[in-house]
Amino acid sequence: MPDKARISLKFYNLVHEVAGTAGESLEVDQVTPWGEVIHSACAKFGPEFRSLVMPSPGTLGPQVRILLNGRILLDDDLERPVGDGGEVVFFSAISGG
Image 1 (tube, one colour):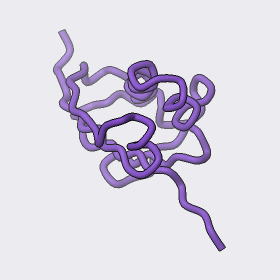
Image 2 (cartoon, one colour):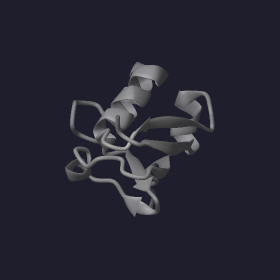
Image 3 (spheres, helix red, strand yellow):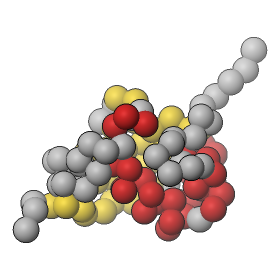
């Protein structure tokens, strides 16, 4: 049986508004891919959350940035295993001029 990892999900700005919460903690197997963690969050928080965060399977939305322990999570990282977990921060990209 794989070791477990505790993950902290934190939601800011528009992502917080759409999710209806500031975040949550969950426990997953360390071999779980990051894409599966994000897909599960999309299933839990609904279609509007999904359209922001992962509009199509395996592709992160352009209007949201996801940081994993302070590092930007990219599409290529979605197959990486969670490992020892950490903090995942979701926030909407800000533009202006």
